[in-house]
Image 1 (cartoon, rainbow, N blue to C red):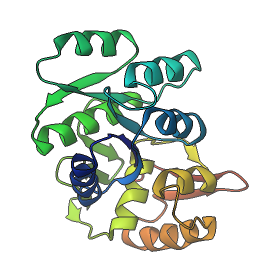
Image 2 (tube, rainbow, N blue to C red):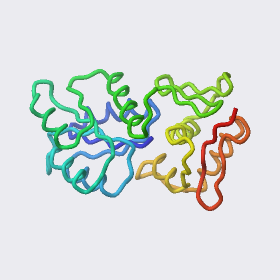
Image 3 (cartoon, rainbow, N blue to C red):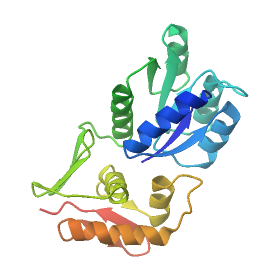
Length: 220
């Protein structure tokens, strides 16, 4: 899953980035409102962490511009604890949730997981597709009840497909959501990780739809 982290405080931004990467996310960063606006308009993200007090362009303006342009990416607003009016304004501007500073990283991660699930119409933190199950809280993957050890790349690939069971996902879409903007993107690498993942899952769990991409299938 690919996130946009918008925070002008370099120390906090670095701390958040490290925690998000450790949790398995791919993270792009923006330190001001104009950069955030541009990235949100040109890059596909699964969720955005948006601070409101930004230089160049404030977070509320950025959020309104995204929503006015039809961008539906889930947005978690970061606010100062005593600025309750920012929470109200943020939600009214199109924010999906908010978190007051200072906060515990565990709560941030839980809210992010929930936002991403809801964006795909999923309610439970335990994602299942046939014999395959992925617990978004622990990162544990099982197939037919047995643990499946995955590398970080394999896990991110499976997690993206598990959030879209039955849907065809192109190699381009996978590349855009599994790698940050500054990463050397090569869609052929996706084929390598799909092949590795297939060897660890039940036969037929990942289907190739010729000319379109891949689809997670509910095999017993």
